[in-house]
Length: 182
Image 1 (spheres, rainbow, N blue to C red):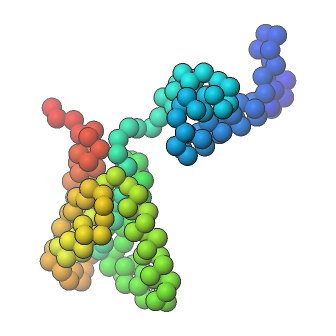
Image 2 (tube, rainbow, N blue to C red):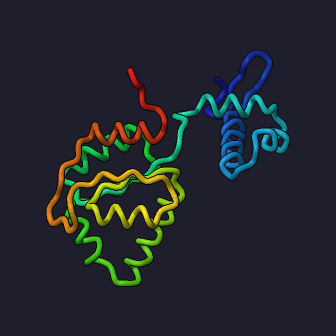
Image 3 (cartoon, helix red, strand yellow):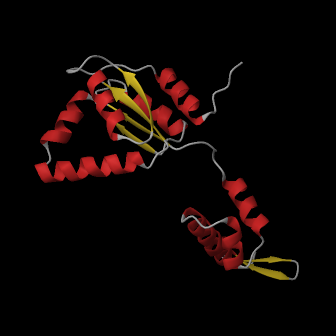
């Protein structure tokens, strides 16, 4: 290795920064919706190279999933499942946090934040709702996505409820089509 950015391989001098920039550019263009072929032509590489890069970095296949739940007593435990399953959006609150969420914002700020959350959740292919029967019914009406609801009681719920983390994991895997039946 010559320096931090340059590497000698035989008679070739390789620039790590150029590789990094090219990789970032490929991913940026693909995430904007360009096809592998379009990216390959634009950057002067083979389409198979773009495909192999994606395969190399792939974390998982399957639909994007959001999780919204309140009031949950074991939100940290559920959040660990969400991280392990690589959910794209997670909003979990206990009873105290959900009331603070409403109380600590002005009407306009609350409306803006709720609309931002709805917009982000609607971008997902599927949504898991954890809440009262009435909240889950409202969530189904607001969302275009496939919605799976975990009812934790009749509305209104005034105290935190515990949700089985393995039930959540099973729902995520079922929604993504990655559950394994033995």
